[in-house]
Image (cartoon, rainbow over all chains, first blue to last red; front, top):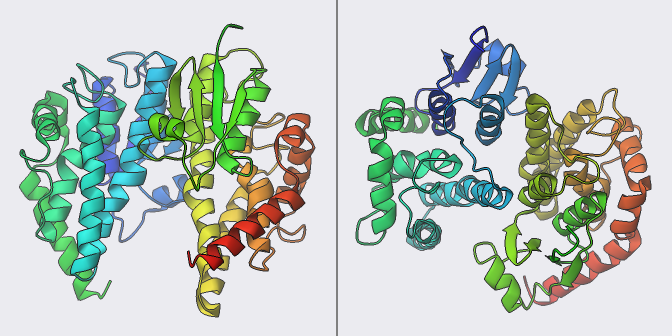
Length: 225
Length: 225
């Protein structure tokens, strides 16, 4: 499988792009990272993801695959080398898919609502809701090192949002949700996760990401967006 | 596999519940349908889907699986009898997953925005957006009878929303989007799809669904919800 061309259209600070990089590294696949400028979308991005015009896009021998969770399943089905991303048992696979969707469809929008909330009441409600979802994730870690068990899997890769982006996004609005007192298991998971060698070499440093997000926020405010 | 217990917690007029019924029938699996009252959620529903408290929930020998698209993949992986719901080739599988997500994550919210829009401008914008997404689906059907090719597959099952619910939901607010002139392929697909024997015996009749949705709308208005 060495004559294969694997390209990833991605963005340095994008949580979904990083998921795909983690999966490719887990499988030991060489790939070319083609950095995208989302403020001036490339013809390649518009050609290969005409529906959403978003990163990440994986190009495997010229064939595009879009949407990070779809790409993760594609990588697991295509390259049998390296550890499995999804478990083998159908029920365990269903649970992994359920929790990966929970992170994108439920947790991520809740954090966005905190950021966009206006007024103390609205913010308070948004925080309560996000805390409830994090509690749900906290319970899911009972008796486990990773969401995937002893090793990282689909849910852990999807949860890179929780391990890094969540805290950075909330720091921009002066809020801290993930504390050892309230979420001991989730905080231990963050430590263990960020300490895995593949994760460490793939995710950006917290301070660099925070700087980048601050710059984007300033630019958006300056342009009334 | 005859000694297996398969139960579906569902709702008669629910599009996601019907997806699961279609998949079970395609695979020839006997199941018990346990009707749920969402205005008074059963202990069983709360026990087996404590996170979302929603239908459908598939119980296979007592093990719960939630979220319709997750359940469809579970059914396809568990029962190899009957036609495949997902294609075998990893790239074709990724495309099927992409389009199934597009229906739930992009088309469905766009239709909801039309229903909830206030004022002509907001409604006009919501309609334009929904039309654009339907055009995307229309293009995807180029040269194909079904989204899955010659036979129905994951995307067609997910698109039961487009085949029936979309039109009924919009009729409640006096709007018709799916016309032969604007969406000839999509309208042909709706005809072919609703004519498949499994689909015909599973989906509710359009007028019955409309009556039910009208009754729900009246109830919600009466209770200021």
